[in-house]
Length: 309
Image: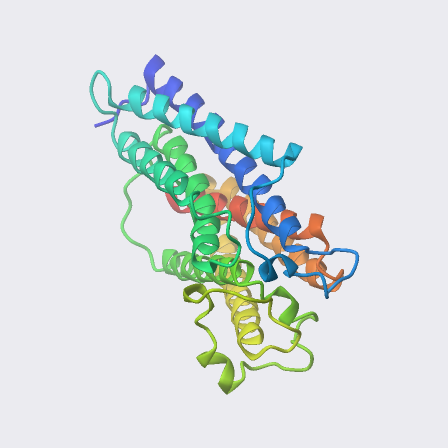
C-alpha cells in the first residue's frame, strides 16, 4: 500500500511531472517532424504532399528540430530510468512502480523501433510511433496521479458508463488519426464536415483499409476511397467522443471531487473540435495540425485524470 506522505512520493511525483512535460514535448516535436517531412501545407500543396515516398530513404538531414527531438527523447529516457529506480528502491511504491516500469519498457521499444523509422514508406512503423507517443504521455501522467491522494472507493454509478464509452470513442479517434497520418491520407478529405460531398464511407473504401500493412508508394489523392473512409470514420468517432465525454463531463461538474477535472475535459473537447475543423479548413496548416495532435494528447491525459477522480 502506497503512503502519500513523505519525501519519496513527492520526489516520484516531481520526476513524473517533468517526464510528462518531456513526453508532451516529444509528441509535439515528433508531430512537427513527421508532418513537415510529409510536406503538410507545402508551397505546391497538395501536389508536394508525400513526395518523399517516391524516393529511396537516405540519411536524415541535420536540423535544429531533429536535434531537439533527440535531446528531448534521450532526456526522457534517462529520467524514466531514474523514475523506475526511485519507485522500486528500497521497496516498490505501488501502483506507481508498475506504471513507471511499463513506461520505461515502452520507451525502450520505441527506441528499437527507431531503426526502421527513417523509411516513411513503412506506415505500420509510423502508426506505432504515433500511438507510442500518446502512450508515453498517458503512462507518465498515470504515475503522477498514482502519487496523489487515492480516490475514495464508491459504489459503481451508471453515470461513469458515459465516460467509459467516451474513452473508447476517444481512443478509436486517436488510433484512426494515427492511421491517417501514417498512411498519408489527409489529402483524401480536404473539406469539412463531409468529404467532397460524401457523407458515408464508400463500399470500396473498406477493402482499401490495409494501408498500415503495405509498403506505400504514394500519398492518397483527393477522393481516394480508402482515405475518405478513414477520414469519415475519424470524424464520426470524434463526434461520438465529444458527445459522450461532454455528457459525462457535464454530469461530473455536480461533484466537488471531479469538477476541476471535468472543466478541463470540457474545455479541451471544444478546443480539439475547433482545431480539427480549422486544420482542414485552412488547407492543412502545419501549425494547426501539430496543435491538434498535442491537444489530443492533453485531452487523453485530462480524461485519465477525470476517471481517476
